Image (cartoon, rainbow, N blue to C red; front, side):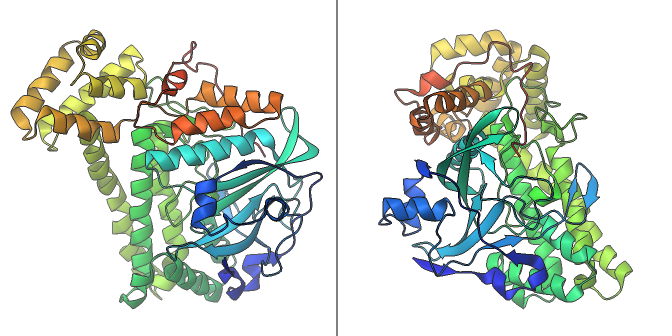
Length: 481
């Protein structure tokens, strides 16, 4: 186990050295054995694992810090947020040489807790563990969960729940909000040190560029475009795309109010605090572009000494976000529909399909799954024909006329883009409730077994494919803070 802590080389204003607050009666609830193995932790003694990842007793070589950052929360700038219930305890290098942050979430009050209790409830911890594993298997860039450890202490949110500490593994926890914190302080030296650290950590090839900080902006934009396209592909609604929840490495972080799109309605927003739909499904690419504009503002002093010159250099990159996104989104939708070329006819066919799905309130994941299976199943072909009518015949004509591959090739291509199962909202809520009532992880483990192979029909997959009876009409998610 190779442990390090590169954050300690940054200016001390960017972090606070402080220890996790121990929990009572820690018990291992969930563990990610795949991730344990890749981090070289598979030989760790059970008791040592529990004590370490509860935060009760850290190995001597670990150095615990909490990170400072700012952020735009629902469009309003807050100059100081920071890790209010999380401790970054070390960085570990995996078997392939990749460095990972190891962070405890729910590990007690910190210098940035304000009025928070610094704790995490078991329900939201289970949600994050399941969702991060599901997104990884679906092919969505994401942070990962290493373990969930329970406490005998009660945490009161909507209702009392057992407390928990979740161990999150991330390529880094450097956020757009981290840059906003440095920029808001007017500390150019801190900003440069943070930028150089970020380049070294995530984009080392940029260090030799003529203007590495402009290149940093360009690369982070590309990462964000890829991330949002993947969210849109599988129907993830993040729920709280604040700049402090936007990692520059382009991974998904914070699954508190997230949900999955069911009925295809682009305006869908499930988060209880997103009252105006700022972070609705359809708005996610727009918000990502807005967040990148905020990131660009932070980098201006490093990109050029003259502010107007710097603005002129970053504006084209921000403006190009939309075109870059549209290109990748179109390519993604071509894969989902089995089409090859982004011709005007194919683009219209895709838009017509989405319009039918919206008007008929069809389920997003199920419709694309049935469309895929209709290529090889007469039964599925009849089902989807009733849903899509004449559109289906037009689609088949496009495939026959415009595609150079046989049906089996098209089918395999669509299967790779269209999951057979997702972590549907009513199932994740049911699984969490079963875990809380039984005080056992068995329900979560059964769900995870299916979600870890989302493109394959396993023996138990059908248990998690049914649609909610109310179409998620009254479903709400919460931050779980």
